[in-house]
Amino acid sequence: MTLDDVVIRGFITLGVLVASAGAAWILEVPIAVAVVSAIIALVLGLVASFKQSTNPALILGYAVFEGVFLGALSSIFEQRFPGIVLNAVIGTMMAFLGVLAVYTLRIVRVTPKLVRFVVAAAIGALGLILVNWIATFFMPGGLGLRTDSSIGIIFSGAMILLGCFFLLLDFDSIEQGVKQGAPEKFAWQCVFGLTLSLVWIYLEVLRFVSYFSGDD
Image 1: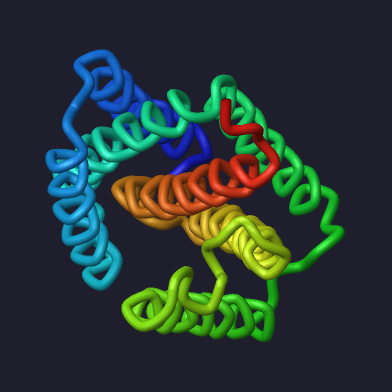
Image 2: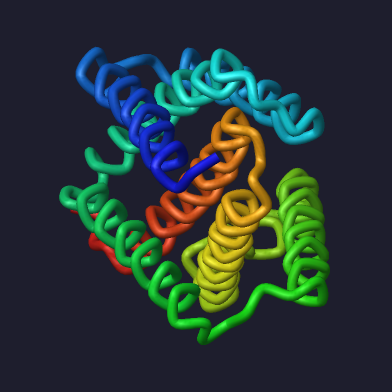
């Protein structure tokens, strides 16, 4: 595996995701279809993650269904908050470039301790999101983690930061794979990890910006 392998497959995967998102936006895909696509993408993502799959069909399939969901969701946000999608895209790109600079300059080094911390933080965050969702059945807004409030803003900011830490792990995985002479097909798994992190960051930036956008 070389860095070029990762870059080429990265362009392909992200290109498929963006194309399917654009199609979903233009065709005004119903929210029900978007939800089904999100579920399919989740299943494919879990399979690819747990099997550490390097199957391009599986990873590109994830990109297609995730793209449909993102396109439909982005359209809804854009209708309510004009200009928010462009801001979220720019924010995601800035996060990517910022983390890349931090990793390249070795400002933050990826160590086994950092990996354990990021994984533990992710598990904790997902647990909180689940508890918050369950709480919404008993009280409006649940614990307030996903509401336009101080705690919601702080939690969303923390989720963006967590996504950036996952990008650090992705960059390290790519570097180690190149150094250790991993098989060329491993580039697909590296690209899948990058795609997951970027989708995570984009969704959280989209939510974060919505808290400060006027509802016209």
